[in-house]
Length: 275
Length: 317
Image 1 (cartoon, each protein chain N blue to C red):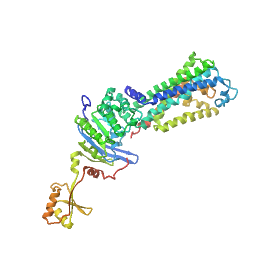
Image 2 (cartoon, rainbow over the protein chains, first blue to last red):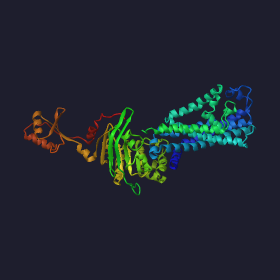
Image 3 (tube, rainbow over the protein chains, first blue to last red):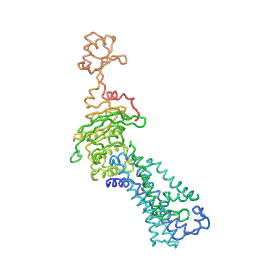
């Protein structure tokens, strides 16, 4: 298992993508953190009249300083999770696209070991992306909050729990990515599927289910919502658009998605002939 | 040509009754053959005849419908650290284009239980040390073949299985590969290489396993295959019936081809050797006028093509 882990880690570090994605993740989250902190604090009214607040009406009270900080610092699990998700998927689909799966399985015929090694390595790399993305969001957001004279709440242990669990959420997204990539080894289909689901299907479902009486409960169990629950807050919950599960519930739901997808991939793609 | 301090013992490869269909297409049917250590065995057949499928079944990548493939008596996946027992080069194109040659080998090294310094050894051995840091995406087909061979040699295996290793190699590369494989077999290793062109491996193989349409056509030594290559002599003259009668009286077998007589080796014991001088002498003694007396050598490649069903025998698999 140790050899398989080293091999998988080397697969990641012997190509260029990992550091490019790392830089993009940190920079993108820093930019979004700064922008969000700016828009929350300079013109809180815009959140109610704008698209984000359209469902809640004009009686929604302005966000508290804590809600602002939570929403800004947990941007990685709210908007940045697509990076570890895609990287996780690429870890498996790349093997099929470039046909390196032949060499991989010849060197390690125990296919479960191959899969588990990928899950572990992408968990770790997801954590790295989580660390970088969350650091970006916190630095970018806190900088703006300080400049405009709002509290950063960086002395608050609850806020640091949000930050820490955000990293864990992104690590789990990396694991989910491997599961998706194993279940759908076609790289284009896998990546397009991820983008369509995360950018379109889940947001629409969350808005749509929230509008239906009693269906909002289902929306809490969608993977994105579960990850936000693990982080403890999100842009959606802070702006009153969605309720979240408890932290442990959210974490278990997210872990459940990760394991179910990996198992499904093991029983389908990983059992097939490699031709 | 330093491979490693002690070459490992070669193991026999046994294929017994392997059968595989992909949907409606029968790729391999009841195929059995053996590959001996210390020899280079050519696994020959046209494109699509089932060679790659057979090798993939032998290596546990494809699950056979029936039959077994074993290396030293064990299935590939049951070998301890199999890639260090069997070095396989299946696809010269199966590299991540963004990974360097060195990176590719370093990914494999931990799984084979070899130190990173071994990567440098095999890179040098296949002549890729100078381009080790270049991305494989920019490699020529010949360089990819060399890298695939380096990966196969990485674990210092006693058994080498190479699928079409001569594809994309220039003539100098083919000579180089031939010398290397000869040397590896000479050390006692088992070398099995597939090819659809007999001519490219003729100079290196000791034994041949010929398949066509997923079935075994012949498994024999190369000299036995060469013995199949026929010699014949084309004969013509104004009195064809008279020529024919004389030739048949001397025990030669005759076929008519494009209007001329083709005197063929029958292969039967006691049949006279096909020799244009003997034929000419016999016809002269019979007082017959001869216009054409032309010895013809049927090449090994033609013999091979005849065995596998001619050049138009390609099937999809």
